[in-house]
Amino acid sequence: MDLRRLAVLAAALAALAGGWWVRGAEASIHTYDREPFREVGNAFLLSGGSEGIVADGADLAAPGSSFIKFVNVTFWRTPEAAESHAKMAHSTGLVQAILFEAADRDNIGGSAYGGQRSICCTPDLAKLEGCKQGEVIRRPSSDDPDWPYVLDTHFSANHLSVKLEDDQVRVTKTGMYNLFFISCDPKLRGLTMSGKTIWRNPGGYLPGRMAPLMKFYVLMSLAYLLVMIVWFSQYIRFWRDILPIQNWITLVIALGLFEMTLWYFEYLNFNSSGVRPVGITTWVVTVGAIRKTVSRLLILSISMGYGVVRPTLGGLTSKVLLLGLTYFLASEMLDIAENVGTINDISGKARLFLVLPDAFLDAFLILWIFTSLSRTLEKLQARRSSVKLDIYRKFTNALAISVIASVAWIGYEVYFKATDPFSERWQSAWVITAFWDVLAFVLLVVICYLWAPSQSSQRYAYSGEAADDDDEEAQSLTKGDGEVGMVKIDKDRNVGASNAFSLEDEAEEDKRE
Image 1 (tube, rainbow, N blue to C red):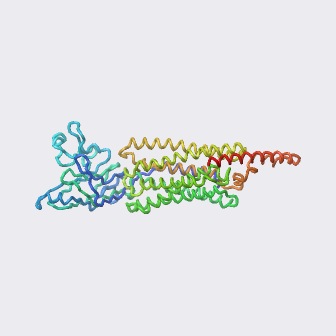
Image 2: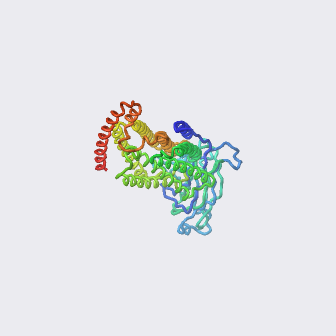
């Protein structure tokens, strides 16, 4: 199997990966360690998590059906709040757990006479809504009068803590579920909470938007493995003719395979345990950042003509390495912010000051790549290196298409997030992440196709100006004996002129560098 067949097979696998649909979504375990409540309007509020949950339609009494379970949830109030109540008092503070589907979010809270929306019932709202003052305003869902689901917990006497009764809430409707712990008692300022909630579907603990990615990474690992097998077979076969740039391509393929496999096992561990160890996720993210950095430096080096029109990067080596190090740090910080410790389906959005450096460096790299490509194409045209010129034109076209696709996808991603602030389209959100991996893989396949190891690899390598004119070399092989002398003389003259051009051009380039 050659690399041209590889391109077709790999593209098919990538298409399958992009279209893979997963019916069941998984959820996760949320732990709380004295988490503080924050004041929001007239309520004290703590977010307990947001997950996409799928109701599988199974018997609700079955142990594997979808549910959200409360385990050892304990609320702690301040000593000052506890001491303000008598020892024999019965109910001295109310805390409520509110669980609702995103489509029912307007059934929580209300406003009196068109004023500011309140979470807790006020005297005016008690008259208008019929709610009970001091409790969360809740209106029954049109689909199920038992939802939004509310669990009440009362402090007793002057106790510092109270434990929520362990409960398991069955999920009978697929949707994005949100959990909030709310207190409307102004005396409970400084409230904290400990414990955990278990969000689970029959398949495991993965959050809804992450579940499809586990099978996606399986497909991507298989795709990279196919590329690795075909590329390495060619690499071994023609190892005497291998170019330096082909060694770097081999490294990128290996890193891609390693990264996709690590992501799969990281998700597999998350799915089985319900938690994401910081060390494991950080290690996977670091491998991904290295792969992205090396991939971009590979493209930049190819664009500069490394190994084709110049034997080394010369004075630009230090600049390229510095840019690579900077990009690695920016990518590492961004990926850590987005992945490490991320369990919620809504959370995990990186901060703006982490996104901007990564985007700026990508834009700078694109500008440098196309500027270098333009210079390389000019040199190849001047030297009339038709074979190399054809390869670089195809490479330029592939890069241009990938940049256009990236810009278009960024626009779609912004639109997707702007029109879905509550993550109600979580079942298709995995495609946003998967696209970038598929695009990087397709571009790598193109590079493998253009720079495939073969017995003629050295024809594309830098070997001095005397061997660069492929057209004249081809003509010299077809000329008769009587014309050899004339061709040789003409070729020598051309070589001399070409060398003069090369020295002048490289001198100018060195000045620019």
